[in-house]
Amino acid sequence: DSSRIMEDTKNNKRPRSSGDSESNAPSKTKASKVRRVKGPARDKGDKRKIIVVLQKAALETVKTKKGYELVSADSHKSILTKLKKDISEYRPDIVHQCLLTLLDSPLNKAGLLKIYIETRNNQIIDVHPSLRIPRTFNRFAGLMVQLLHKMKIRAVGTSDVLMKMIKRPMTAHLPAGCIKIGTSNKGKLVDLDEYVPTISPDSRPIVFVVGAMAHGQATVDWEEECIAVSQYALSGSVALGRMMNAFERYWGIL
Image (cartoon, rainbow, N blue to C red; front, side, top):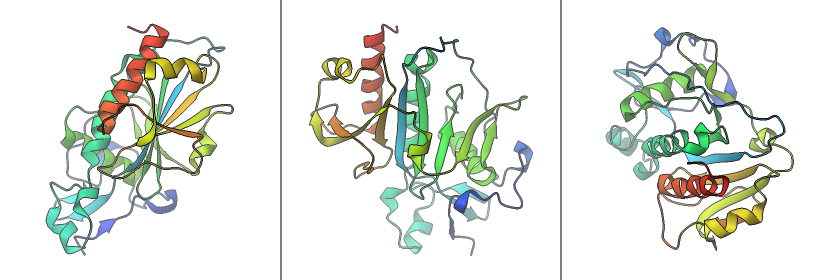
């Protein structure tokens, strides 16, 4: 059935048709070539690290007459309606917005940020800090289709892996001694400038769980506390911007 939604490469098994070259991409959507942006060298004893887990990301593929495409509410409304899916849940553009905010942040450029994505289908994506994400959504969509079918994305002209699918559980990839913090507009309201010093970011990694979906809450059973960064409901991208700015101010990153 050409309109059947495909799951995100179940159980991390590589499809038989997959390869590592961009020329074998399963979608006719033009995937942007990805380049690596070199970051600064850090002292090995530096324990500062902010880890962001983007939760419930809507990253699924669908087979159409044009090939495989990233499912989105804007482009595949008729298919989703036919399959009786909640159209509002298919918003991969939210993930794109969040990644642009995070990867472009001075905190990331200073080498102090790490990003993971957990999809609605319980797949985990490891995002390298040096990834330069495509600026436009169409190119981003092509890149995600390539990743979901081939399990990894390499930098142009090198063997460096910039995005890859990794095994569950998420907690297996978090550093020992880190503090795990959920975010929600129903969490404990905090002033970030006052809150950041209380969680000892100089001596241990800090993990934040942030929703990358249109509605609902990003809840995991391993978070230690849940905070709200504003008295208002914010988009994931705006909330992440506020969080990154707070740590940049705390560490004097201009």
